[in-house]
Length: 93
Image (tube, rainbow, N blue to C red; front, side, top):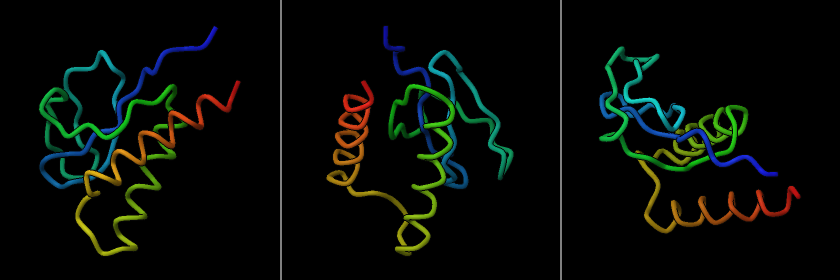
C-alpha cells in the first residue's frame, strides 16, 4: 500500500527560503530568518511523500532560482514541477 503525501514544500514569506512541513503542522520557525511561518498562509509548492523527497525538492528549487537569478517559479513551471513529481511517483511502483 502506498503512503499518502505527508510533507508540503513551502516558502517563508519573510525571506523566501524554501522549507517543508508535515501536513498537520500549523506553524514553522524559519531556519534562516527566524520568522514564525503560519503554514496555511505560506506559499505551497508541492506535496511529497516523505522528508527525503522534501529535502531534495527544497535544495533543487533553491539552487535553480539562485542559478537562474530569479525570485520565483512561473505558474507554468509550478504546474510542470507538480506533474513531473506525480509522474515520478507513478513510476516508483
